[in-house]
Length: 364
Image 1: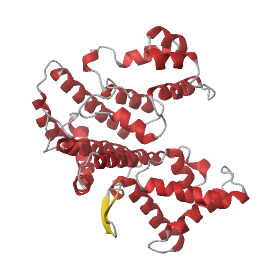
Image 2 (image 1 turned 90 degrees about the horizontal axis):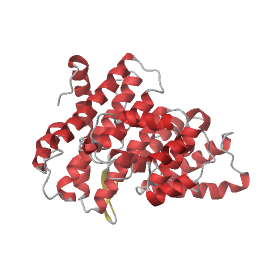
Image 3 (image 1 turned 180 degrees about the horizontal axis):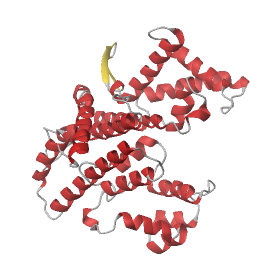
Image 4 (image 1 turned 60 degrees about the horizontal axis):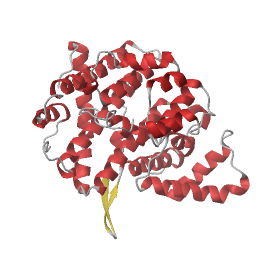
């Protein structure tokens, strides 16, 4: 998932890698393989020290060792995903499709969600056809109208790309992914508007040191604090220190989160440090979101299968991209201006879906 072959593409360019980074679940291909093995074999005791993983880190994978370790049925399922597809035409879209197919097969779905999966499949086919048609040519100029059509990108330098010339494409791409995810939530919850991401768009504020940039993760935490202030205290806002103490109390009162009484002060300091790191652009894992954010409203055990919490992956994705672009010297105001178009991308995803339901065709 971290190698180039699994991440190349246009519509899904580096989506596998970026989502793995955003998930904070795995750190490398080897780590991913270990966690896959634990899930497939239902064995949490599998470690990186097994000979199979040591061999992978040294020499990569070979079919015999994969069959020996995972079994032939696993390999056959993986091969069926790529059946009839030339290696030159594969890329991120195959990995994303495989993940989506695995997820959808594990759930009973409504008729509306069946249409949604077909809608996603149309995106995979669109990507496949573009790669297939352009695999034998170095004419990158074909990218320009393609990106303008599907991602509304108007500034893109195909021949000599730099951070300055592709940042709009990167931001529009991840916003479209976020819009597709939130479209799923709306269809699954039968709601016309389900958007955490619209409330987590970056902004900036002047302070004594100049202009302070606030990434999406910071906006998420501000919304958590202000929402809690409104519901718990009937106030528009509270101090961060008050929020930290309420998080601590909720954690102490939860039977599944054991905290020693004499560890209260160190625990409060730990909460403060976590929030400080997240507010500066650090990523929040799903389990951390359950333990330190959702715990204010729901017992820890009840949020294990709360799918809407997966929105944290896309908040992390937005944050990660914002931090990387800042490090690449993209001006904060340009990043903010581009991300502020997210509501338009939500409407675009919905419009394309509604058209697809009627026509059965993916239209720009």
